[in-house]
Image 1 (cartoon, rainbow, N blue to C red):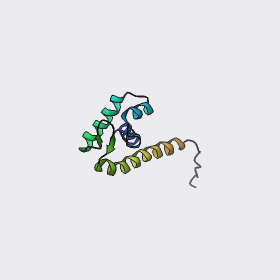
Image 2: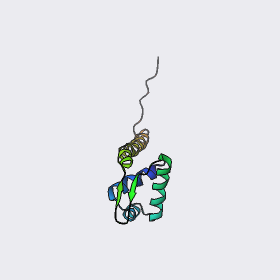
Image 3: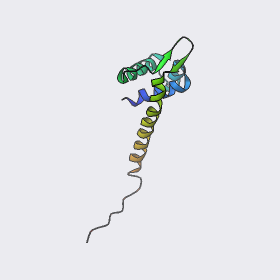
Image 4: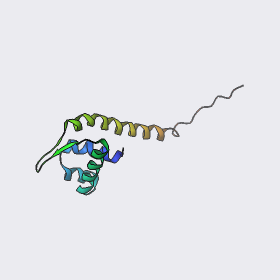
Length: 96
């Protein structure tokens, strides 16, 4: 699962607007559309109901949103912890 697709999904679910979501990531709207389509294809479920004026999460999209947020948070946590590995020197105790 592509983390950028998940981040885009989360942002679109909050902003409910493809253009604003694209602006947030400094990408074109078609990239947002493609990321959502890739995610929907991977999951085998429609995540959004799209019409001219609104973008709303489907029931499946609402359910998946909590998982997407957890996955993105877990990735951020892993990156943070890995970057801290070399920040604090380890103290080795020699065996005698």
